[in-house]
Length: 438
Image (cartoon, rainbow, N blue to C red; front, side, top):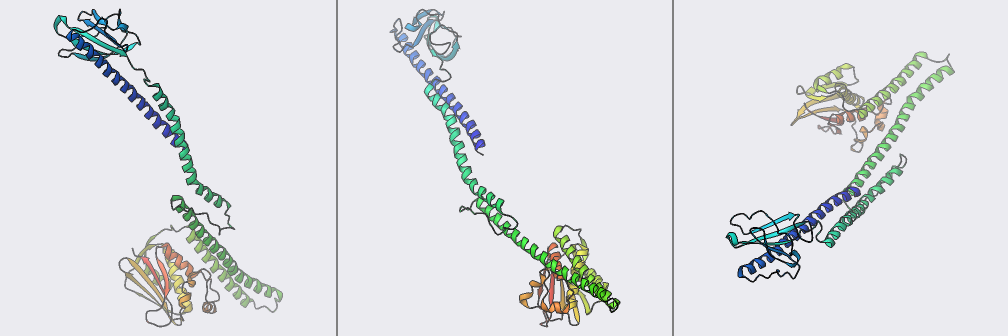
């Protein structure tokens, strides 16, 4: 940034210096022409009234010469005495003055000269008055040119230094943020980067970094808790399997082989259910861009209800076809999880209601007549591996992942899943799923 600013300053100051030097030279040229015109008029006036001195008076060393139309010198100033006549093309008709620049004439002080020419009189007796001076050089005012030349590196250095100070002051908080981030590790996620007092872009960046660290710390905490819960949930069926096999091996003559195999099968099924649910969660978290198609929730609900028998009576009520855009297998798993959860906790019946809600929402309600869930626990049931005391008593083999998976699937479809009271005032749970309708 400093180099770029210095380069821009160098170019701009150089251009400005060149422009100013050009203006100074142009002004010197204009001033010279003005002085020459004044001297020429003075000589022309003296020639008209007959008071012209020979030689022409030139107290300032002016270069003056008067010739006739045949280029014969009539009069000259002391410095032009004895020199060849100035020769220029004839003046345009009806014009008695001309400003010119020419080189190679016989005059002291330079090679090229600025000339002001006057014609006095008309006809063969007319006279030509020449007032000339050396053309101003490239730097007519050396001191001013030197100051302008020195200003280019001075301005460049000042701009570069000011930019360096400004950039250093601006980026100092960024450097502090970088150092703090370098020191943060996976075991030290409670640290945060410093937030500058100024609420500018760097301050907003620091706030965004801290917000990201907050989310990262929460994610890591959830991951650690999840790993701990997974270890516990997998250890229980594995321990039961090990115990059944060890008991059978300890006293094989007393072991009831069919009963032992049934116990092993139950624990194997529980272990398989946990693994299946973990795989489902992993797929949802890894990629939510699963293939989507038009899915009729009414048809899908009927298929899931009829797919296998359940403990309670399940009734599906629908106002007609309710179609959404989503993954068919994911939505089937969502409905199955809700039905299985309601079937485990219901006393005798489960009701599934499907309807369309304006402006473009598909609503699925799964209602059971069980004991219900206290309001303070209604969000906890959607946490992973969460099973309330009553739920563990009713279904000791549950994984505690079904409702968590169901909500993740709903969110992946830009929908929502909540647990609330029944509308008729009876005891029981009412799960409400809302999805964008196709």
